[in-house]
Length: 178
Picture 1 (cartoon, rainbow, N blue to C red):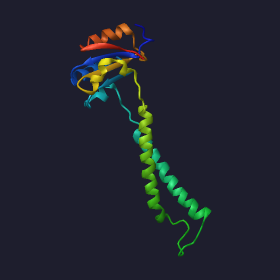
Picture 2: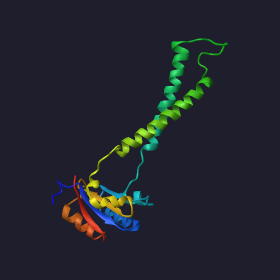
Picture 3: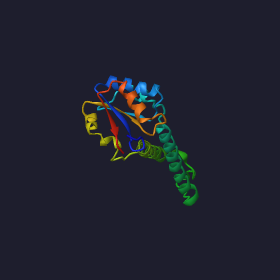
Picture 4: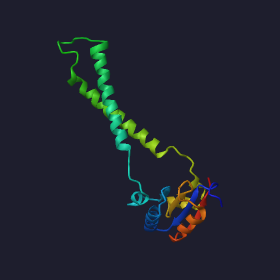
């Protein structure tokens, strides 16, 4: 077994609490390239894995600001600069009439940036992942829980990591081939 030829080591657990404890121990031991797989959401798993920041709100905020500026700027450019028509004596820069379009553009661009940012930050679409090479991983969508420590982790050593995983009392440990 050579660490350059495997994606990582995966441990199978029978309960969500065992997975949660294993992820906490792995994070406390210094492993940072760890992922947990479960058939349903497990409360506290993200914290146990060490996920802290979520950049999506900032992506949505930037998208909303860009949308508002684009909507307002387009209306200003058309009404004041490119095609100034004085209708009924109103000023060319009539900002109250610009509010509905500005609001709609804010929502539209923020929503698109949210969806595209989520796809980009999650690495989607990803039709293939090395964990699918583990035959028993199909149970992750039914009734089993898995934790994978990737070989790209700084602390990853095939033998030491396998021993670490054995100490967590998993059902079994598997090599994940790339």
